[in-house]
Image 1: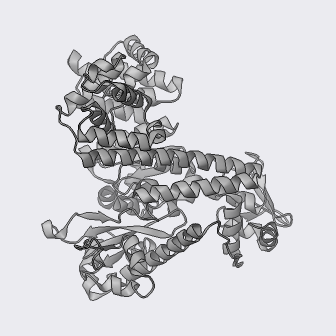
Image 2: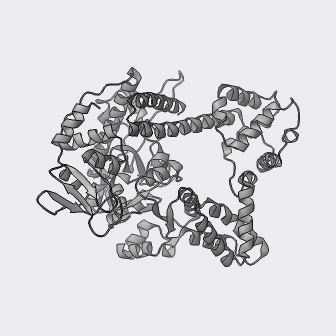
Length: 591
């Protein structure tokens, strides 16, 4: 963005007003204002803003700078994005954007159109909730304790039973291709291979908008008002679109990110109603995974705002399994994690309605350390009354202990586990030591790091006779995308190369020199009972390899781009941006 435009924005921006949107400032002199620093926890204000000099400084943590520096840090954005954000806040018209290629311009227009469609759809759903047809939806929401204020706050709406009403509302502002890409409609492929007429994906359902970090609606979750086969699934989500990748989004982050910074911790729940109920009860630093498995991308997203989390998932088996995966991902990234298990096996929404916000907050204050939760979970799954169960319980815990990045934390976790399982702590530490010394073998065992389904499929395909169709498909994919295969898990890639190099008709097990590799392949053969995958399964697995490789490249480019921006290397920024856009297009082509 041009320097002269940035200077214009800086001259017109009132730093006190801008920062005042994020920090509660009080006058502390003729031109000074003070408040609690948003960049570190404190109880006594040490954060100062000088109106005349248009400058801020924290005497506690040392952070300082101008209005652009503040927005860059508080919003986790680049300098050009900070300039744009402040210009919008100040009502300053943005200069016409220049695109590096026609494709980039088209992509920007497409995203803008999809954002517009979701905004219009959200407003339309809100209107439908107030109609006579929306009475049943209003009755349901009232039964869930939702008042008008909460419905408005979260822009909850109603999708009527009509197949065509939403299409008729939107078709005047977008062409059929944009409507198809929006994810708001379904269609059937015709005999000639072309898409058939569009009809509403969400019908006779309550709609919950899903917003990005900036508060723009990019998708929906819709709850059915009826049950039975004809009603479809209880909850239906938007498909992934150019705007929406479910594993990259945390529900309510747009509203919760500043409360999370202020509280220096996030409450993580499963469902949107759990999240909404907690938020409306005054716990505004709450996020939801929207019923999807917690992902590494979501962990990285959350780490921008805090590294302290309280997890409160449903207590059923699925919720417990999701909690365990979330704990693993969070602890690996150095988060301080606690877990809440609510009395009576209730989810957060029901607990708040039955017991009130005060009792729920008390339950959050009583959250247990994640290691205490996991030890109790191991004891429930494998009551340590026999040597066999003690071994099972320890095997359940060892991967979690190993994931803790701090050696002191690992030692404390291991000592507590040994005591509560009635096992000699020296034996537990020895197990950890052996695992560290033989990490490759340990990582190949199902208890520590099981192979993904796509890794299993590819190893099966490369183990097949060279004349088989699945081998030929896998081999052709390898030759076309060798670099992508090279980014696979190292032991899997090594096995693949050994299998490819073997003589036609040779026993796959005999061509593997390392014991760990033979164990890896033997485990697959046992787990799948020798059944070969279908060709389409192999093709899907190859696409997964491609996607993972491109996502890894994209992460590296983002890191390099941030560094180049920090150093002011303009040419490098341009080149990296173009490469990143190319990777983004390739990823989109895989969907």
